[in-house]
Image 1 (cartoon, rainbow, N blue to C red):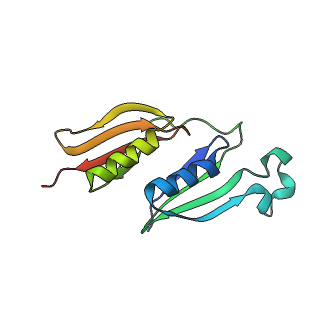
Image 2: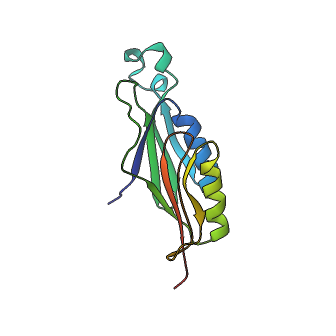
Image 3: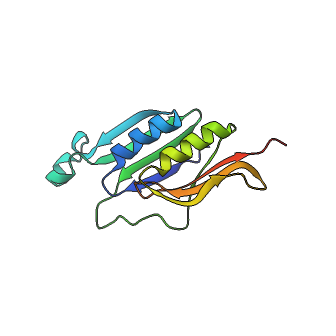
Length: 136
């Protein structure tokens, strides 16, 4: 069984996945636009370059996403994509990269449970938590 996060974007899926690929060290293994799909004749001209499906693999895990049509898109609420990273320097780098152009909700700092923890909404509207647990 695989449990993966699937994100919807308001037209910026391709840009977001390229940022995530660079920051997280994964690899985009699939990025298909509406114009590259068998559905291309059923999609408006301004949606030909929007992403129908993207998959970013991070080891044995995957982050997937697509662009949602404007009448079906809503900003994420009540969820966070949570990343746990064992190295505080790397966790801080990823937090800073995701926060660039976004909104920090809780700065990345030491907590009673973590060597570093922070919460943010990135420039694409995706909420993230970055956690680096303290060694036991």
